[in-house]
Amino acid sequence: MSNLTVHSWKRHGRDRLYVNLPDGTAVAWADRATKTVTIKVRKYQDEALALLRQHLGDDLIVSSPSTPAEEPRPAAPSQQRARPTAATPPRRSERPLPLPPLSPSEDLARNPPGAGVLGMIAVRGPSTAHRLKAKLLRQSSEWDSWYTGLEGERWVGRELERLSPLGWRVLHGIEKGNGGDIDHLLIGPGGVFSVNTKNHRGAKVWVGDSMAKVNGGKPLPYAAASQSEAELVRRVLGRYCAFDVPVEPVLVFVGIASLDRAVTQHSVRIYREREVAALGPLTGKLTPEQVEQAYSVARHRRVWLRA
Image (cartoon, rainbow, N blue to C red; front, side, top):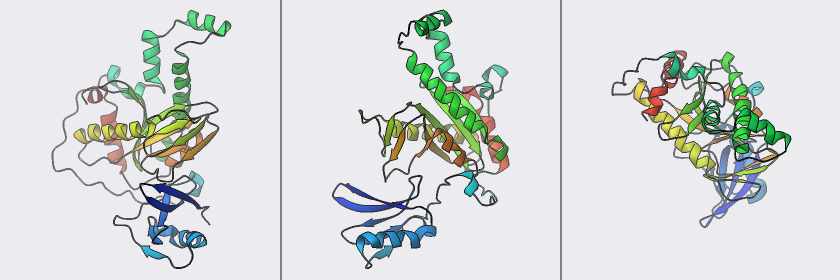
């Protein structure tokens, strides 16, 4: 058994039951009114139908999705089988742009996790003496959230670096031309992942299609921002690579007490910090040569500032 679960979903006049994997990936859904079942991942069809029959009865109507079935996301590296040969992404018709020269000062491979936050603190943050004084006096500071974010990026950065033996390349703190930075970029056999880190120590987090809530507070556009960031990465890498670059957004929460995903949330990969290891065994998107080409583009600081 695959530990599938059934969740109810009602919105815009629709009443559905979703069958999900433990990581929140939907493998099937059923319309309560018509009892029509759409199978999204064929591998789990029998299990999903058995669960749905417990809620809707035996007279279900099974239909196939109009798009190819999604591959389930792996729950942990230990559950993976032997890696298949990587498929080659389609080549682009237009010629890629030439890369600018890469100097040591503009090589993002030199960036440590949290490089963007460290740069901001170095320019605008408190001095070491002021930080020590505030700590001794137990005074809060407007920079506390920056240091919390830095801690989260360092933690996730260490987890991502552990994937290197599986053929993955990692970059940190990529400054964007329109402001802000990309916390981490993971490039490997399973494609490219833009990783956004959020440190909410001890919090209860809910993530929906575009928004998230921390401890039931106001909606935060975490998922939507992650999707926009992934699209930026796809555009930038696509200008300099001779093939279409597959990019997915990843949202990682650090130190939280609980994580709840909406049943419809499958456009962004949502993990806790130690769950990012599930990305390691993914394959079939890029060849080793394409991994190196995408990495050689991504490490150029100037290509991001021109975006």
